[in-house]
Amino acid sequence: TSVEVIVSHDMIGRLMLMAVRQPGLAKVYEALLGFEGSEFYMSPWPELAGLRFEDVIERLPEAVAIGIAAKGGAIHLAPPPETLIMEGDQIIVLAEDNDSYKPEPPAEVFIGDVLEQQPNKKQVEKLLFCGWRRDIRDILQQLDRIVKPGTEVHTMTHSVPLHHRNARLLEDGLAVNDLRNVTLVHHMGNTSVRRKLELLPIETYTSCMIFSDQEFEMDTMHSDSHSLATLLLIRDIQARREKQRQDAEASAAQAVASDKADSAGMSITVTPVAPSAVSSANFALPKTPSRLTRMASSVLKSTQPENPTDQILAEPPPPVSQMTVPIVCEVLDPHTQKTIARSEHLSLTSDFCQSNRLVAQVMSMVAEERAVKSILDQLLSSGSCQIAVVPSDKYVRRGEPLSFWAVAKRAAKYGDVLIGFQTSFSSEKTVLNPPSKDVEVVWDSKDFAVIQGGSVVNYTESMNTNLNIAQDHYLRTQDAWKREDVWTGHNGVVNDAAGDVAGDPLSTQPVVLPGSRQTLAEYKQSVEAAVQTFLRFLPEASETSLQAVRMRLSCAELVNLSDALQVLRCAFAERPWVKAEAPRGPTPDHGDGGGSC
Image (cartoon, rainbow, N blue to C red):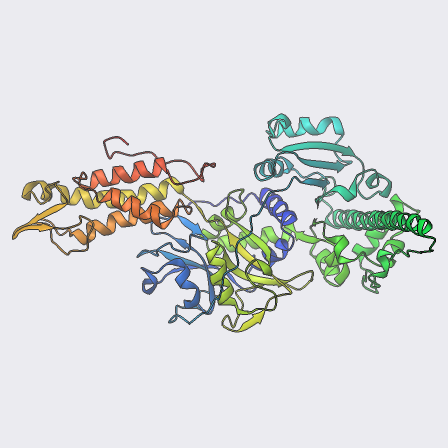
């Protein structure tokens, strides 16, 4: 019996890293993992064979198709919309249960004019890590692979001395000098102490991650109170410094206006508007403080008596515009999440990752369906396939009513797979696989959850499996071809017992090869299956590229299927139409086809 290994600490670290760079993503995974709502299922549906992946969207009213599990074992999430579903493929979906959905006749979906795609340019980032996790090495390595050169990561903790941090990373297998895009800047201090945090350039960070520090990980309640105290202090410092900036700008504007008024002999007064006037709501914690609230208060009061918790919580929170710097905060105890859920404003200050609960949910899902691990490995890897939260205006114009299916069809034009939505700047839960997908809705206040960038698991194994299937067709017919001189090798002419029959060697003519049960249609099917598998590995390949490969496979110089497979392997290795970029996976060996590229 094989065993599935889940490295929980690494998985949570990767999830937090992705969540802090995609505000709202933590809520998506909270809805995705576990057994409440929609889950991952996969089933073969013979009636869908031969359709393109994008044509499945409107055929599953009770589910959302997210990928294909190929007959050879490979899993393809968010495949290119033109990908053909082959016989034996399983459709991976999000659904309420494995018997809650089935393909229906296609619904008519009007998508209208698709919006022009805007380029997504990487920006240099500056991140703050509060606390020290055991897997911080893996987080840094993954971050280094996805950010732009010049990115800075500032770390602050009191649990690991400054002069030990790089050495600790080296012991774990990461030499700081090997980081290509990330520069590490270490700070010493307890992050629940205001005077320590005020030494940092808080207002310059593009995002912040608050880890459950390894010093407190054995006491979940203490760890969570420390994390919440850090979160509240960071938001408070951000708000105060933003107010100072606005006051300084207002004073400068007043000075300029006064100078102009003096020169004109006039008197002008500019009254600045304080940020606190924008919102009068308070951080509303429960009237009866929980144990967690009391512990967070004691942490703050013990570390900065001049700023008790009551002062921070009683002041009006900053406007949403001042709280757009993403923060993701790790919590361990389920009671903490309940406390956060009872305070709307506290829940809006950050995305929260309840790591222990997520790990338990993942293990339960993998125990029920082993393929879930391969799906999660793709979604949480540093490859191109990932869940993203995007604003609705990427696909829909303001005020434009569209059904969920119509938005999904538009998203497919970008290569994205729409799986759900959530309300912007809200504590409401993410809705995955929504009902009534044909009802038109105005999406102005929503963000969409999508899967972007297809990827493949078992890359080389799947490619070789499909090629071997085609090779097997050849081996079983090669002797018959030679014995009966069925294949002339000239101008694609096939001879049968009745005489010469001219045609494409990949045509669908049901010509039975003498001495064999194989037909030209099966010949075509085996090679075409290999071509489709080949193209799934390269979502960038266009329809023009597909035709080019087909032409090479059916050219007159190919005297048997072995040569066709060799051309396929060579084309796969050359990939002349793919833009110059890092490959998606290892390049498969050319195999035993013979010949040269």
